[in-house]
Length: 264
Image (cartoon, rainbow, N blue to C red; front, side):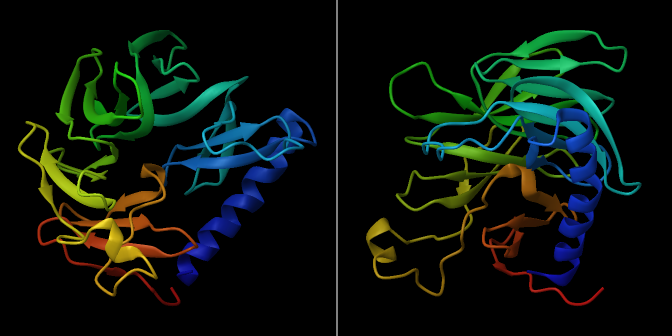
């Protein structure tokens, strides 16, 4: 892992763990971080289950907020009923286990923003909308990528065959990058907030059979989630590819490489 990333993780653990144990009990554990920087969200479970969860099982979480620059932690909601949470401007978006996305305002007032939301919440830099994975009405596991504004209006941006998921939106609010399996290999695609025809950025020409026996040198791994993505600027996206490895992707050219980093 990039040394600077490792230090960020260790510092977050040092600050979050004592607060979680104090506020939720000694068996509680934080198991997920949503976002980064100021007002990062933290998912907490009541205790580690005795039996491992099945692949499709998602634990229901209580939510805390962690301010990375200052290290302060505060409880947002003590009920274990959420799948995800993200800061959206001054508000907090909370996704429950039934796919209902609610917006909690600073005064505590809460309203339903959207339904049939699968997750992967990623807010705009302005805090006026967020992108997310949407769940279809039909059978199976088909999903799409949508833009949800603060009035609850939902606009589908990408809906190809199979899974379109894990979206993120550039700092200028114009470019949406997501992961799709429409070519049989999980790859990055790019579109716009106007819903332009998606363009494949990575793994162009690869098919699933080409991964048998190990991925080729040209393979660009997909992100583990949208919660560990950071934009360095409007062109460069940094993301967690799993195993402690971060990659950088140029969303204009499709060029990607591991971010090995260095001592900072």
